[in-house]
Image 1 (cartoon, each protein chain N blue to C red):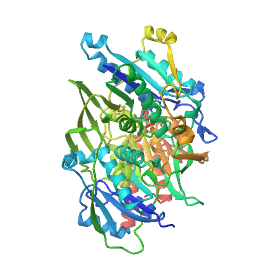
Image 2: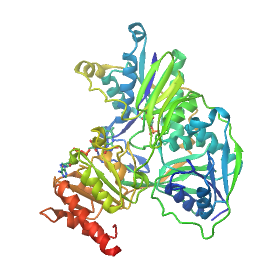
Image 3: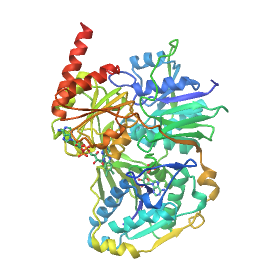
Image 4: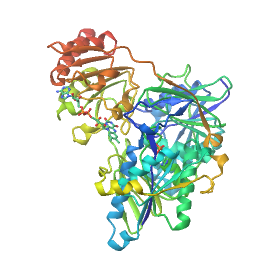
Length: 330
Length: 267
Ligand SMILES: Cc1cc2nc3c(=O)[nH]c(=O)nc-3n(C[C@H](O)[C@H](O)[C@H](O)COP(=O)(O)OP(=O)(O)OC[C@H]3O[C@@H](n4cnc5c(N)ncnc54)[C@H](O)[C@@H]3O)c2cc1C
Ligand SMILES: Nc1ncnc2c1ncn2[C@@H]1O[C@H](COP(=O)(O)O)[C@@H](O)[C@H]1O
């Protein structure tokens, strides 16, 4: 490990569970590359600060934005991008890490452009190579290939997919200070007419960060009951295929144009396994499918599969899992 | 209204996609227009179709791709859908470009078009299905010094203002910016039209303009492998998964599924 400085974007700084697990992963990964500092655009809560301290973050750099960029405008990629670039200049950082979301991809790209830095989007890992440079691995072509790329510039900017590493607190917790720094944004103005933050009221884990995911497709014929019941028995997040979402049966879909996931377990029920869908889930460690068609393409990438009707298979599996959990608890 | 649509030529997602010498293999038999750019073309065509007749008559839609000559496949498809003009920027110096090199070439092509007459809007897809970066639209806007409204689900143009609604993982937003601007559309924005027979026939003989790096005033050292800030040093296919354990449900399928999960400590 060298004396590198690694900046991690903590944005938004808080959610109901404190710092998001995807960010805790980046802090863990960042510690293997150097000294980790955090960048935020809003004041962290006391809980979030304690968590950052536990993960070894001594300094949180909080952006002080011009009045016209505060409020809803502070979520604009141009504002987040300018903040990241300014933070790198302030700290002389070598690496910038952000979780992969549509908005952070744009923000990190704009920061990399500003800094003349190399950019890696959707990395599944980041490490130091023999010569002290940064190399990133990526899973591409719907999970069929692994690539490794070397960053050729002094500063490396990367977004990482969730579940790339297991989050682990630092050996010793540290005291965390918040330091303000001024940010100016000179991008052409975009006006935020209206913004409603998505409320995740569900008791289920968040789709992109969950370790276990159950997804339903057209084969549910509109009834997601068996899918959610099975997911809840497992304690899994729920997702869908795009077709199921376009039908209005569920709100979020997995795939190349939807959410990309890399959980420990993916279960697809009534999903054929189209390439667009695979692109978003093929990085899962264990893949399971329930499909009534013995020729379903998804079987090609499965570890385990049941040929059958999901409306009977899933409830039976849910019962068995509940019984197993009860037996363990008792 | 003059609209440029940026379209990418990519390996067909249904074909076997591969790398050779750390570069994506772009086999012309299996290359196609990036499907998500059909949404971009559709959005551009609808904006023009929504104008009054005089404005519509005076409008032009130009599809631009940065690609080797095989990329004409993408432009032919754009012609089939109904764009007025197709431009391909090709140069050996562009091979190995990263996001920034591609963006520089696209921006240079837009500037050249702008030297003929103003360009009001640049429309892109939400992502290229080969690299899935989703960053070129924002970078292109920055390069051109224009506002970026990205990932649009709904698009409106009125009185020189572009307004979009977008739904991201974080929020539902309505954003507005003055033209000229850069717009990227999500796959939820529209359903791309099927080309009609007349346009398919006409597309066959439509001219494709070919511009080199020099033609658009690009510094060859700043793009392609020479200007790239990252370099792919290894690309390997994933090892095949072990044979699937397939259970046919005869009344015990659910139990078998649960047992598999329990056995593998996933419960
Ligand atoms: C540009 C573009 C981007 C796209 N992006 C995405 C994306 O990000 N994510 C995505 O998911 N899709 C995406 N799609 C759509 C994708 O191509 C497929 O159309 C979609 O994934 C199919 O959804 P499905 O598997 O639910 O439906 P289908 O393909 O219709 O499959 C339904 C399956 O259910 C099975 N079935 C039926 N009844 C039962 C039953 N009772 N029990 C068990 N099994 C049953 C059938 O055998 C079948 O295999 C995209 C498409 C395009 C053009
Ligand atoms: N080589 C290219 N030529 C033309 N347009 C491109 C090219 N690369 C990317 N684009 C445009 O930028 C969008 C997003 O691409 P990307 O950022 O690579 O995922 C695509 O949907 C295209 O509209």
